[in-house]
Image (cartoon, rainbow over all chains, first blue to last red; front, side, top):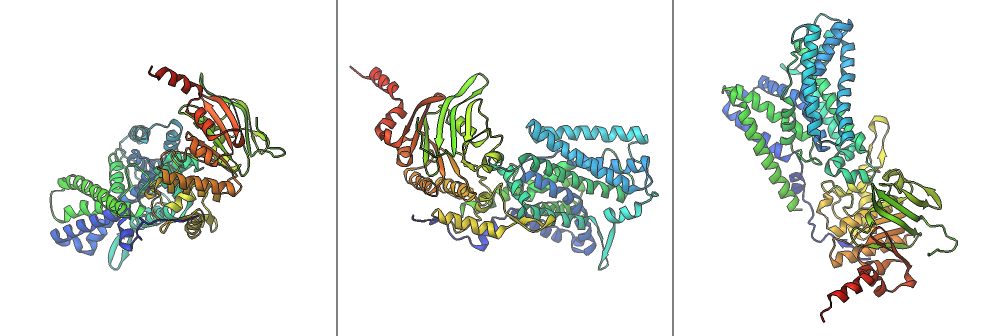
Length: 342
Length: 263
């Protein structure tokens, strides 16, 4: 039998391999944004500023990572933003009403938030409706529950302070501590963020579950036909988002002590934008966790850079929109080049 | 009906039927698949070929008749169950994920793993190496198993799918129109791999509407027409011309020719 040698397949050079990385576009974009603010804001390059930028990036990044995984798996979660608030509210109110130790509330919150994620995934795989509709429903319901239950239980739109409760200092250390490194203060969320990026990258690139995530997003029917547990994978992805929401929610609670029940609305889009800027295909099957981190970093740089440059922060959204368009165009262009040159 | 003496068929359908609501998709179809043989299922569009495949692949269950695997009467509940019993199906759309690298596709759904507990991970080196060597065994020399499978040609993708089924120890290979979307040369390449799989002792079900392709490799021929069986032949009981004539419509075609004939 004669072998079909890939005569039309040129050997892939290292440069070409680099060009085909999903996060390349976002890295180029991040470098451009960094340069831009480094030149236009004097204080941008100072260490404390960098720490502020990283902190802002991490609060988005912690959620952008599981949202990116979910997008690679071919789905959206519009409830991700308010789920963070729900998680914080549950933790705070359960602790205040039921127990003496905040850690119990933190645990209950984890279970409850994971249950919301599982509900999203279960509804999606059961009804086969688009995730846009399912999670829009969850988004609205959670928004209503957040406000309604909080008012019902504490009488106002925010929770009562739990700062004097047992376990608060340790929980504060875990979720909202400030670490000093070389004279500069860093928030612990940055560590959480990096750890999540590392974990998500490992799952995506080196585990069976990662293979399944790419497959259910890229071609769900094909995945099912070769025996991939599609339902389990999707529910798992939604529970991943819920896990991220739990960490973010606990950070929110333990850094401010009280939680406003109306917060979080609109953040779900920010997470999605960070993932898209980071190279996730909106149709699923392609993307990376590192990319979502770079996307979140672009976000952090822009939101804080505008302040350092002493511009009117009203312009933030404009920059964001422009950035999203540019990044997506750049991604599309890079990917086309990479695929055509193969 | 044909029966190889003393041998149990790998897969045997007798008098199988399937209804979708009040639509009869399949009625009284029988066929046998033996090790080292190719059973061709021929039929026009809408003849029930896809339904037949789905029953053998475990996607649908039959309503009437019996399905025997290794002589044992059974009902397949899921594609996974069919795979576990050694029936691998290569669909027309190939069940590959175009954006994923070749090696990830090759092992999709059956990834080998190493490591313990939470550190259990895919054996990536083994997967890359095996993909390369298994494809080489089928005669495809891919330099880069990392390229997205969507960048391969239709024939190559088909061969990857067949190589995958063979590697995972399939006893029965079901091929859904493997040559339908291919050019002449590519079709030839694919048929060669089909024959190679047969020579390795697999039983093959080849679904096609091309009698020339079927006759080149087939041992048994089952003709379907509007959901029911229009004929069942072994290779020595039918000629290519007769097969082509029956496939093209048989007597219907004669009538049509008669009607259209200009006087």
